[in-house]
Image (cartoon, rainbow, N blue to C red; front, side):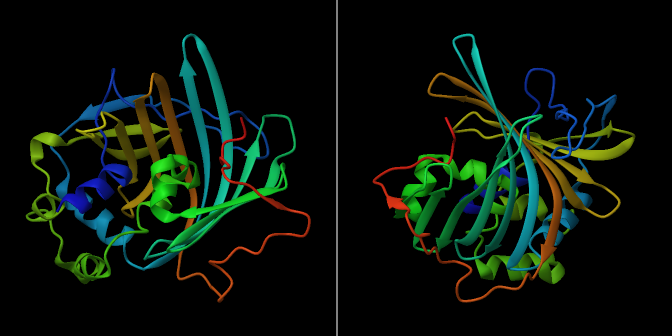
Length: 279
């Protein structure tokens, strides 16, 4: 399935580029966890059994609340900009989500109050620092590229068809059919065991063929859960490297009829365009 291939590319599969992905070290502060680079890496036969378990666990529910920390680096012509993000998102298939985003700088208070909300058809972006918001269609939001900052791991499940989710969670995936179901061949994937901060992960490596971006997913082999996702590549002469550390992921959070709606605070101005990125 072409759709499943796209989803898996943004969530669970990554190719090694330039020597391989490394776990990112965030600044030490109250806002960010500390990482060290991986200290061991051993290539081994692709663990398809773990892949099937991970996919089944990831799509067990149609609704999740995810908290994560993201380091986003953009470089161009010798200059480099780094953005640190904390996010909490409630996501529900089909295309519904509410993301609270805080921009952080080491040693400074976080810039909180920013929201991205989708009711499945249109998306609201609210910047508390500017007291502005904008409204756009869901397809336009995807095309803008800003969706990456909402959280790759949470965003990946937003368009997953319910009929496919039921197939996955019914236990129908196995090491014998997982690649066929995902529309992949064994030669497209690589797997390795890596030690990060004394903890062992199994890493699936995949390179997205059309866009050229490299994606990596660090899986805890003990419980088949995703710990970290990385995205690296070039877009419009920009070097991009994004690492999302998943702190918590809870199934079936409480939602209300207002969860996936945005109500502008008093004094907020609607503008034609507005980016999530605080540049």
